Image 1 (cartoon, helix red, strand yellow):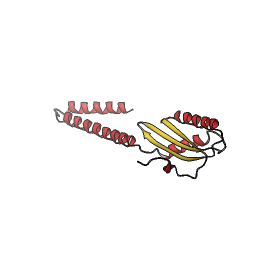
Image 2: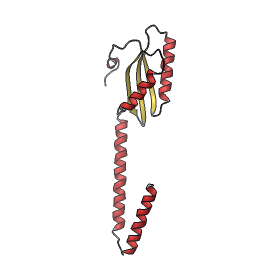
Image 3: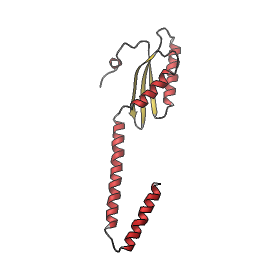
Image 4: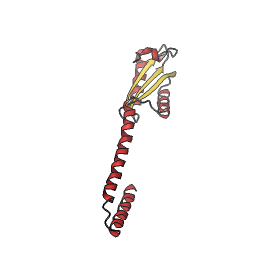
Length: 148
């Protein structure tokens, strides 16, 4: 559709120039307009990629999708403690903390976490997923890591 619109406008300008004489100034003006459009589109792309490379967080709708997939992954998951998703290049790095029963054996807990990780990594726009397993949710996740 855009191609046809551009073709129509080009034909109109060609006809107008041929009919109404020598309009040498149209070529530099057209080149200037095209150059400005290219600069504007490059600026938009650069601004978006800079935001993504700086680790901008995912939008709430994407986080809700991660929460839905995580909560419905296995019946033993009691609750979600923390969900984070950051831009990691063109996709997301996802971190999910799930709460499992305290008495669950390590093998079963590991299998649930690993399967959830693989399921999250199969989602569109997820580059890498990390699933943290816990048996309680009263701690503060921020205290588990060094703050840079």
